[in-house]
Amino acid sequence: MPRSRTNTAATTSRARVADVAPPTVERLWTIGEVSAFLGIPVATLHQWRYLGTGPDAYRVGKHLRYSPVAVQAWLESECRREVSA
Image (cartoon, rainbow, N blue to C red; front, side, top):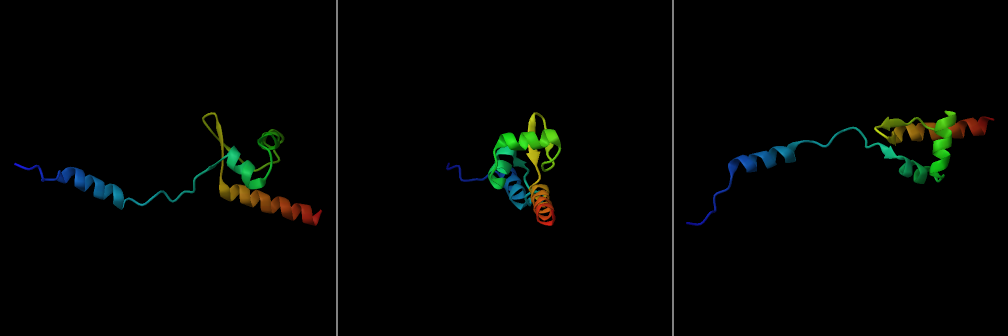
């Protein structure tokens, strides 16, 4: 007898997983990604964090993570500050 029957529980489970929308929160950037985006060394980001002058970062365990929106807002505010100075 051929085994052509499908497991309906597994099929239903896969269908439910496929129907779930992806998360709506943007993925946080690593310090390397922020460094590449801004075109500056990682060491500069560490120094800015120490001095409290760089973009806000979150500590997730032992890692730093940055919100892309916060980094872009920080960059825009820094550019405005430089122009008006």
